[in-house]
Length: 158
Image 1 (cartoon, rainbow, N blue to C red):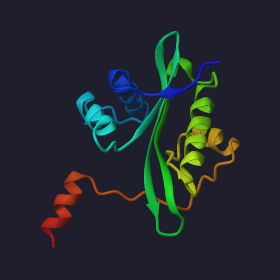
Image 2 (tube, helix red, strand yellow):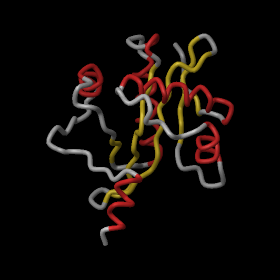
Image 3 (spheres, rainbow, N blue to C red):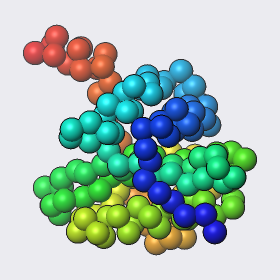
């Protein structure tokens, strides 16, 4: 079976393709602003902001898991899974499980107290997948964000 590996700078164009594929799936095709240069700079600079695992099928990256460290005031160090993406053509073949396994092993190796992520409430296949792995999908929490415009509006109203 295919084994995940750490992504390299050279993988970032394909990683961005999968990010864009996810945006289309999530009905926000125009939302992706990050570039290959951003991914390279932010993931492979002096102080990397994320870790990315990739999995290949026939020498093509067909899945990614991108994670970064966070800090919980209740738990201490935690790992955030920003995205677990498997290309549409490869879904249902076990790649998501392999990538999630790698993320959990990575979190354990880091000694984190929790691994967390979000899932859209209408993405029932993903919810069932995560619950089947023992994850607690906390349906009583809402995600709260300020986008760039929201940040500006907030600051302009101080």
